[in-house]
Image: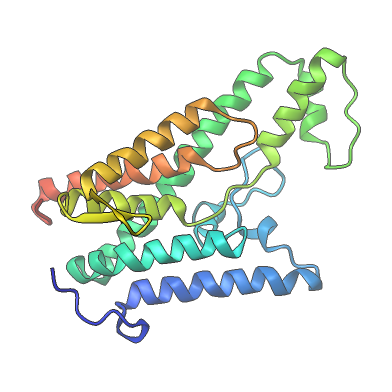
Length: 246
C-alpha cells in the first residue's frame, strides 16, 4: 500500500487540521487558566445532571486532553491511521466518520454512567440525591454513615468530566482493522500482529476493563467501545449502500 510522502506538510487536510485544532485546544487549556477561563469546564463532557453540562460538549470533548502524553498518543494514532483512511475515503467522508465515532463514544459513555447513576439513586432518598446535586466540591454532605459512600460515588459520577479523542481514534482503528485486516501492526514497535486481531484485542480489553469498573481506573473504556460500535455500524451502512467495499 503506497501512501506517499508522510511529512506534515503532505498530510491530508482533515487530519492535519484536526491535529492543529487539538494542539490549539491543549495550548489554550494551559494558557487561559491563568485568566480564569476553565477550558475543562467549558469543553469536556459532563453528565446531564451536572451544572456544567452543555450540548456542544458532545463534540468538543474530542479536542480536549488531560496532559501532553494523552494528546501525543491520540495524535500519533490519528496521524498513523487517519491519513490512510482520509486518502482512501476523501476529506468529507473521513470527517463525517471521525465526528460520528466521537459522538458515539460520548453517547455510549453517558449511557453507561447514567446506568450507574440510576443504580445509586434508587438506593438513596430523594433528599439525599438532591444534596448531591446541589453540592459543590467543598460541600459537607450530611447523611447516615451507610449512605455517605454512595453519595460520594454519585457526586463523582455526575461531576467527573470525560475528554479526549480516544473514542474517535478507536473508531479509526476499527475502520483500519476492517478495511486492512491482514496488515501488520507492531506492538511496542517489535511484535507483529495482524490488524484484525489487534482491533479485536483492543475491543476485548476495553469491554473487560469497563465491566471491571476499577475505582482507581480513570480511563473511559466505554467511550472507546462507543467509538468502535458507531464506527462498525457506519461502515456496515456505507457498505450496504455500495459506497465502500471490504
